[in-house]
Length: 301
Ligand SMILES: NC(=O)c1ccc[n+]([C@@H]2O[C@H](COP(=O)([O-])OP(=O)(O)OC[C@H]3O[C@@H](n4cnc5c(N)ncnc54)[C@H](OP(=O)(O)O)[C@@H]3O)[C@@H](O)[C@H]2O)c1
Image (tube, rainbow, N blue to C red):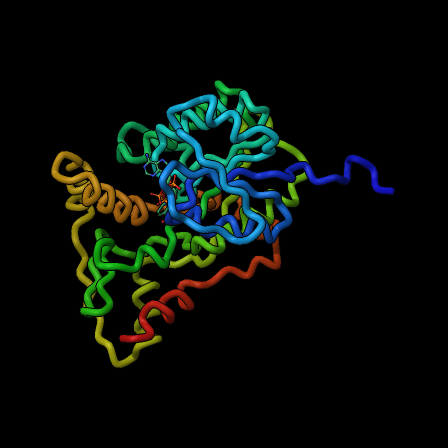
């Protein structure tokens, strides 16, 4: 008979916000053997794989959140609405949740300051909210999602053979697909043996491919030797100005901010080698590469 210490620590998971990123999680959580509940707001018409429970919640109602989280070991938040996450953190603590995975899933967030884009302010305050609530936390850093980044809004217009980059484009960036983020996180939760201390979150630093903007262009060129891609380098200061112009448009300023911080090295999840990648925790992970993503996305060109 196995001892109780060999029982899984995390058996039940609630996923909050099955949207752009979160939609990739339910199948992976269930596949990893975790009892999975998706929290969704009233009126949602999303459908989920067999075996997934769905609970309707109102993020402005603490009692609605607390009752949805009864019996849940870990919460994974993939919300963009970070005010809703603040309520979820409080409710998770009250419901006795053991581990909270806040909505990070991008660049390292522990060094964010007031100078960073306001869209990210809620990620920074979440760290304090988790401490105040006394909740152990797991942060997942994966860099940009390649499949949602290679588009004209972020400077990659492969259909028209034009790429625009703030700065040199030579800075290495960590790229990881949403599916691989979900796979790694689910695997990690299912195999977790101990909880981090409150105020000292565990961090998963995962990277599907390391490539600079110019490496991405070279990969495209290798896949499509007959296509000529013109690369325009814009001054980094121009991007910095566009990033600060929140009043001129929240989303354009956020997109400019991201292009600038990736170029400045903030998209490297090992923080310039100051920390180790977590890929080795699951050697079988085998994430999709930037080349594979580009091949699929540009197959029709
Ligand atoms: N690394 C990258 O390249 C990258 C790119 C994009 C996003 N991200 C990160 O991934 C995380 C999730 O972002 P996302 O784009 O997946 O989020 P999203 O699709 O905008 O939202 C996720 C879900 O949140 C729920 N929700 C709860 N309250 C809401 C509200 N007030 N308004 C709108 N939706 C609400 C919705 O689900 P229901 O309707 O079912 O309640 C929605 O589908 C964020 O931390 C974001 O920064 C990273």
